[in-house]
Amino acid sequence: MGERETAGFADDTIGRRIAYARKLRGLTQQQLADRVPCSKSLISQVEGGHKPATRSLTGAVARALHVEVTELTGQPYRGRTAATDRIHATIPDIREALVYWDVTPGRDVPPRPLDELRREVDRCTRLRQGARYVELGTALPSLIKELITHVHTMGGEDRSTAFHLLTTAYSAADSMAYKLGYLDLFHIAVERLAWAAGHTDDPLLPHVARMRRSMAFVASGAYDGGLRLLDDVRAALESDRSDSPTLSVRGTVHLRAAVLAAQTNRATLAWDHMSAAHELATRVRVDTKDYDLLFGPTNAAIHDVAVAVELGDADEAIRRGAGLRLPASLAAERSSHHYIDLSRAWLWAGRWDQALQSLLTAERLAAQRTRYHPMARETVTRLLDVRRRLSPQLRLLARRMGGFAA
Image 1 (tube, rainbow, N blue to C red):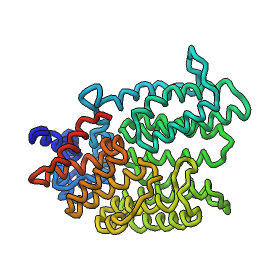
Image 2 (cartoon, rainbow, N blue to C red):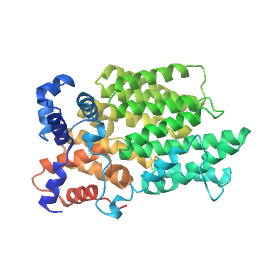
Image 3 (cartoon, helix red, strand yellow):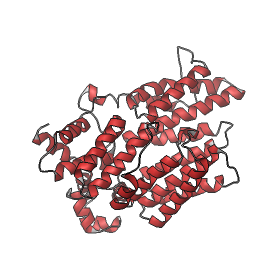
Image 4 (cartoon, rainbow, N blue to C red):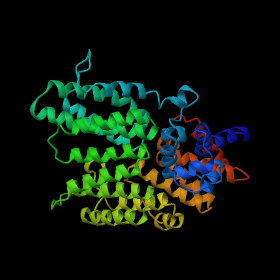
């Protein structure tokens, strides 16, 4: 990658997109700062590339400018060749599959038996946890259509089972769509999840579905609405039940609320939620797999770092995260996100080598997750800007992010 090519990558920043959208709205930096609200100097530094844009600032600016968050992040990040764009080639088929919910898809081949589809759902869960989105996107369309056929043609316990499997498939679809920046598709998938959850015999699943819908508020920069939704879910779950699934859902609600509170710069509220999450993690004692939430002591520790990062406290994030050893059994999607967060903290602290090494660790764990993550790309952009001499590792990482071939 030559200097011209890296310069092009560095020019493609959230800050530059904010400046473009602001000018399109006819606003000065001061007027935008008043609407966010934040300081004019922060807007100036972000637009000029002297300070990276945080998720919370990006969401707040999107709301102030009345644009989609993805207009500022630049998602979805498309490839320039068939090989580098194939992660996106599955999206139209997923979109079509989500259209079928109140009508049976017309299929020449009958759906596979439920036992076989259960194994396919388990495989998709592993693909999702491993952030293997090309394979996941290839598998989901047929899986969703086959399960929809079953829920429209079966009755009794089999129908409830099909709906239960469908919730997991929808959850994988909403996760993939959100992470790749297809927010319209994410909204559809999360609504389908709520619909399917309501037709199962599992009393916790509707609460899990509502909790996942809190990300819709994050996608819109409406963090207060997301917090209110999570408060409602938490109130509905308050009980004397101490079984692992209930504790896992309650704990995950606190983790999500902590991050949302941090994104609105409410430090006390964020750490209060983290304290509650740690108390519940102590009660479950191990990292659980209930509803694919992976709640437990490890995930709570990861969220400590995430909360500190969202609060902009690099020192606290490094203090909590630098010595954290993640088990090899932890889902790659989750562990890679931790190292992406840690890279942001190292960047803010001026520890550029550590920031790069954290990103490389994240990429080694989950390449597709890391290369398509807005904050990972923003960190690389900032590293390209501050380093006078670009290391081969940084050059190659920027190249892989600019055109990813799985």
